[in-house]
Amino acid sequence: MKKTLSLLIAVVLVLGMMSMGVSANRGLSYTAQYATPVIDGVVDECWTNVADGWTQIDFPHDGSVDSVCSARAKMLHDDSLVYVLVEVTDATVAEGNNDALEIYFDEDNCKDVAYCDVSTQLQMHLDETVTKGTNSIGDIDMIKEYKVTTNENGYILEFSIALMNGMPAAGSSIGLEFMYNDNDEDGNFLEALRWNVDTTPDGGETPPYMAVDNFGTLVFAEYVAPVVDEPAADEPATDAPVVDDAPVAPVTADAGIVVAAVVMAAAAGVVLSKKH
Ligand SMILES: [Ca+2]
Ligand SMILES: [Ca+2]
Ligand SMILES: [Ca+2]
Image (cartoon, rainbow, N blue to C red; front, side, top):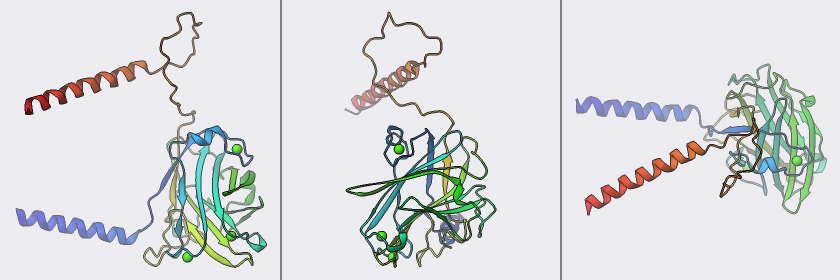
């Protein structure tokens, strides 16, 4: 019985290692909450509260870092568009406008080893122009607005996207990938930073401009603005007018959690005192 168990564990371990070898991508996922920012290259209030925060575009395409650049992104969505905010630092302003953030979508999440009919690769250049990749089915008209501002740290890119398939249902996912492409002052390639796909010699995955199989995941949060916690008032105003559709404060739930915490703390206290 013991032998069978250790054999089983060995088999599970080997299978686990094999599956890791098959796919080395980072397994990243980003949930876009519901909000509508103004596309002006300035960080709106709604960008500051997103639950998933910044996601780093920081994986050197060949495993080695050959330039000084960085990129990180946040995403939102509303009823008609997907919104992207990207902060970029780049020590070299490229000749020929070749510094670019790339965004990729696989709208039916087919995870295919090629580009399916709703796959997109768009290059967002720092002069607010947009180009599309050779294999991209989606075209530059998917970008509805695009603004870039500069500050002492680098660039802020803000843009809106209309997906080919329209907006996915709440809770559903599509394929997503990012890249930052860094060129030098003469327009020579320096570095490419990826988000999820591992094209290093160890990972050996197909670059995201050729295949969508190792894209990460973009999840669409429900189509309502997330509740932002307000500081609790000391006393409810007794003379406040009663509004029928006023949002109901989750007092009961909070009270329940407090009660549960007190009960647990008391129980822990009992255990501790018994140990003494
Ligand atoms: Ca803005
Ligand atoms: Ca490199
Ligand atoms: Ca550059």
